[in-house]
Image (spheres, rainbow, N blue to C red):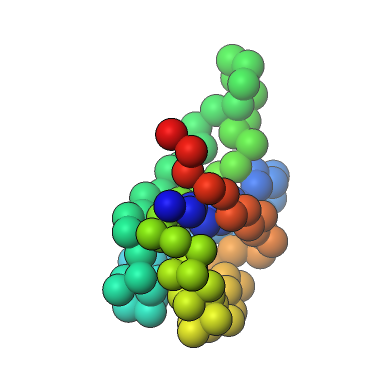
Length: 103
């Protein structure tokens, strides 16, 4: 199994429309990739490594796929459309990472 993580760094003064993200953007992801995704979840950062420190990331989305082939199909089929929606809810450039689930 592989996991696509899309992370939005915490930046003072940045724009992030959480309502749009949770309703419209995630609905788009589900509509376009739903048949290929194994599972997905979103976490909202509430703190950093030390007490009172801001979170490293405001939002992190984690989407699992059965295989790299399934992830590649998702991204090649509708990845451009999904990532083109990002400016509709944030001015933050997301950090994207693909990982292999090992445990």
